[in-house]
Length: 329
Image 1 (cartoon, rainbow, N blue to C red):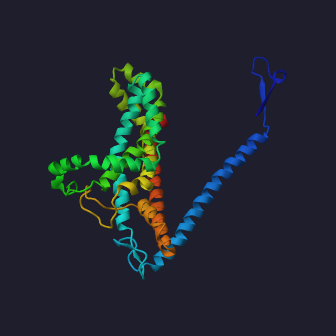
Image 2: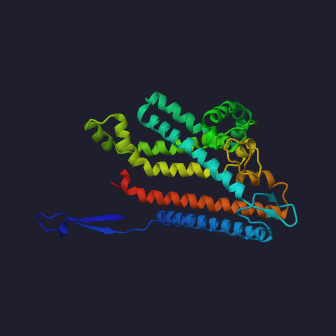
Image 3: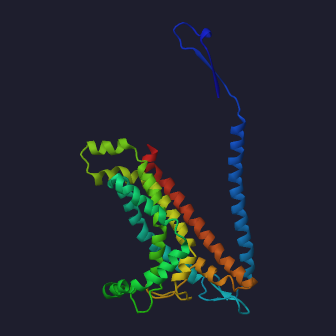
């Protein structure tokens, strides 16, 4: 935009007339074209992925002699093929829920500590260490989980069985702790840096006037956080949680290293066994034939749909709660 001022044509005592002339710049046009093209390319890629998965999944499901959604076995090498995703869907959802229940409160607490409690000398190295966890490869987490976490969870499992075993959900029959609960703990550690980093940045964007006004009214630090910080950052916390959930749903190598897979749905979360979509694809893809790979792609399509539904639900929650947060002010 180019602005020209004409002081001679204005009346006495009145402000000078301002004439605005629009001047298009080549850089703006190029940036607009690149931005628009990137958005369109992303939609095209997503549509291509969905079309490919749907096509290959339809081929596999047409050859499946069992119910794809409710069958408890995975026999793609037999003739006719009989496979289903009931166990995989259960394991994926349950392990991700366990991870979210453990990770989100801890991550929000760490983010609040770094942004509002810890002195700068302490907050900076703690934030650096938390961010560094996100750079650790998945296979390293898996090896740590298999060699350290699994052997050291036996005592915790025994304690659960002694005091909460009557529920049936937390009963323990002995054996290695290669269960969905262990997978949930490992996934919680893996998604912790993502949720913490995003929540921390959201908390730092809280308007200082909101906090100072609460302090001026005599509020304690916790009351300031409860009345000003958390309402403002609610949408950000939900977004951070959904990012973490996306990684938990699709995690492959760490889960495959720790879990002892089988196609049974155990009543107790502490019993060894179970399976997830990503773990099943990673462990079976190399030895599968053409029909077996199509079946694995069909299970990947279900995971793709679950991820889309989770993100869509998160967007709806954020849109509904936005008016209650500080961002609407």
